[in-house]
Length: 294
Image (cartoon, rainbow, N blue to C red; front, side, top):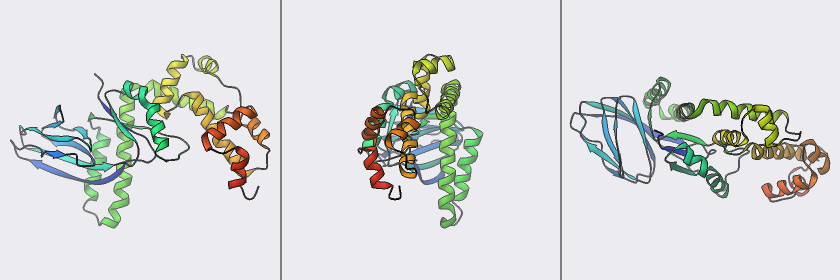
């Protein structure tokens, strides 16, 4: 059965707020809290914990965890069966995020999240979605990173602050990779192969038929793999890559607009329309505005 996932559009990367541990005697419950405004990762170090969020309830065993949302009510369902200790991390994001009941549901709604992300006013060459399992069993690597976060709490704040942000990002990456591996290791490999192919042949004619012939997968499957890893279809990724290269040429060369379009493998009219749609300015005016030396 698929677990729910929390999906974050990145950049910006979710950021670390704080961490700690909490012991419970047998019979004690987790505290009740309403919409605390930050995400809460809870992992059971020893014992077990009964916890709920709105109508959902879970029993977490040793090394099992849950990510609680910042906008919902969570509470202790019943007392701990034995002496228990939990580790917790608070984090937040200023980017777009959403919870989905499965990766399949997320993939269906990913483009809508990407559109909201763009409207949010965040510019990046590529959007790399982060997918974290709602409920999970933390790996040995994840446990080691979480314990390192706790250890850094004892360091002077000036030393610990940067180190904790770094370790927290490593933990997110580990959880994101583990989620992806559980979902479909093959899709990761397919997406990475397609990405390399697009980078190597970006200035040549590429269509879904060529991708099917090259990788021996149906175009719909290739598109699902790319959406899962990069948030876009292969042809959308190709367009983004071509436009990024074209922008560098506009700023760093004296090539004509026609020459740049040719260099990135596009017809002039297609290139101009795509560039204007993305940058809200024509290629020529983009050069005039930013490339003072050309």
